[in-house]
Image (cartoon, rainbow, N blue to C red; front, side):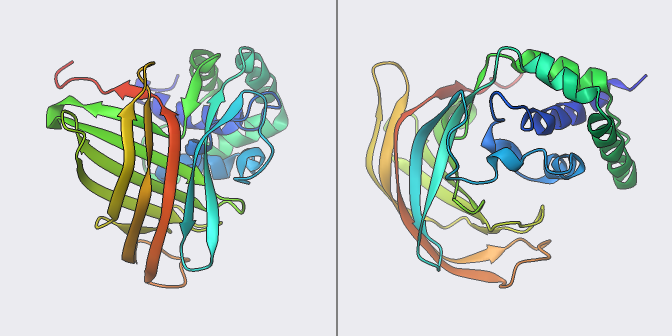
Length: 265
């Protein structure tokens, strides 16, 4: 029997296996960082279907918007997607779990978790439970989050380019006046390791449009720029310690609003 606190790790493995199913691709945002990246590595390429940011859309996918950015090597298109998980995804993943590759993925994940000293362990039941809870749901690379505790709206724009590079732009607004309060960005080059990314907390942004649509979603468009983006202190594979500059524009028509849990609830 696995302890209760293994469920988050099981969720990550479920997401990685989900990307290998042939119906709907997993949310491209699952390739983020940390433990999640480690588990995806243990699945031996299960996320290949979503590694190309300009790959043809899979069933259930749609484009939310685009960040067009220059990070020192010409303009690149970073695409954000919405992905509806297939209604029968539990059956698809259950079939994969019964294969040698599925068993090996779980064994590899648990071996790495043990080496990290997490005290966590995953099993097929964890994966089945998590996948079952995701069937039919839609996941978004980009969204607006209501942060009541600081009276702010956080706009999170995550996009992937054609060769697998990832860019995340975060914009914070006063939730009453919709005035811009701050911006930061993170850039992860192609085939980077878990901690191989550049980040700046001093992004200059110009907002051309930020408004609420009639259906409760938000539209946003504008430009951004940043200089001397520092590499993560734990980066191992980045060629430079700083990225000299980054600039571009973004345009999204209908970002969903997510209400964050209130403190104490």
